[in-house]
Image 1 (tube, rainbow, N blue to C red):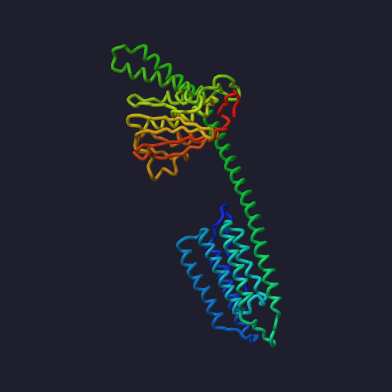
Image 2 (tube, rainbow, N blue to C red):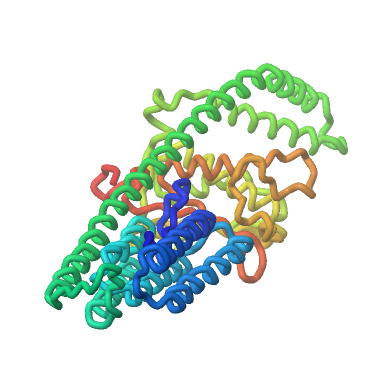
Length: 437
């Protein structure tokens, strides 16, 4: 008699309860082949006195289950927690019945009842492992009480009942110990793997931001000269244009926008480590939000910035460039889609701080909602202008560097909703005593 069918986890998956269906099917065929070989050899070669039809029926049940697993594999390549638990429970029951027909715990192959629990302890969650452990101990108990005689080919082999109970005790303790030990080791390994994945993601994000910073500096350098020329020419045009000229308003807009571009490039070229005053001054968070949103106002679209009524004392925050630019990009995106207005609500408690930006535009497309915030994913494909889809990505990345979390969604009544959430203990916030949290 061979081991029961075991399942293997796909090591590329860091979570629990994800089992490769292909491994399940393959190893169960190996197990069925071994069981058939053992039963037929014992019956025909050693002339053991066992119930061959009942044993073969038990093995046929395993064949039917494996054929069902083959069909299920065509539907999905991996099994979830519940499916894997049921498959392993079937292995325990099938092997337990085969042991009942071949001598119960007197059969030396009874030790293989431990195997499904040992495998489950490395793959599944605690609840499933506990259930399989209880099922295995129950099957061991039933086999200790009721079982057919051991098919011994060399006369009769009468073992004392106490021997069977000693085997039951040893196997039951082995099942519990192996399940608990394997689960604790696997849990620790999963925690280490999860921590490693988080560190790798953080490193990748930092590397991406470093590359983006270098690219921004290069772009600011390259745009400096042509932007200075544009600014000079636009001022000359403004001086040459009469007050009643029909293009006077357009020229004034060109001048104001060129000045804004120069200011943006100046902010990018500033060395953050050398900034000791203005960029890092302590300001009320509501004032900083108004400052970040102000440059992005559009004519004909209202802006409402407010704090939730009944708040604790004024929330102070360090004025950091990534915070201003990140919030500004989100507000700018809202203005470009809004029909009549953009609302910004600031809310905070002792545990977290929330900023909710909503507009009355069409909202995020449902097909792109899960991908919003990824680079080169633009929701403005139909608006023209050659949008690269980097604005929201840059905003999300900058805000995450301040320990914030950006959540994209749609309002129930229509329009987009972006929530930025920070823990109250994030380093950008200032305690009442004057220091940062």
